[in-house]
Length: 88
Image (cartoon, rainbow, N blue to C red; front, side, top):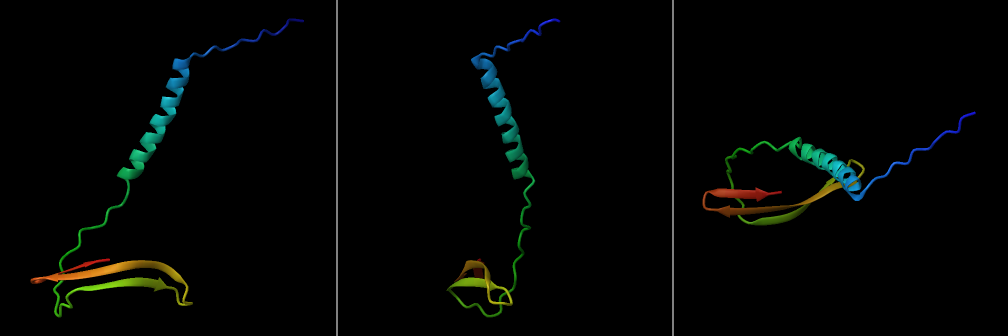
């Protein structure tokens, strides 16, 4: 019967560094791909305002039919000259 010889693999610090950077490179590629594939909002067009209110500031809550809140936000409106800007 033959005895099986074991091979030992010797790695140095450079091998560990290369393996670690290889993993980081894949993670960086995944993050970059995710950033590039994010949907962007289409540009909004101007809307004619009939009755400008002037300055307003409010806090909005979106609720289900049961009354459970599912989203909240803030709305600010500013009128300057013939333009009204609303940020939601």
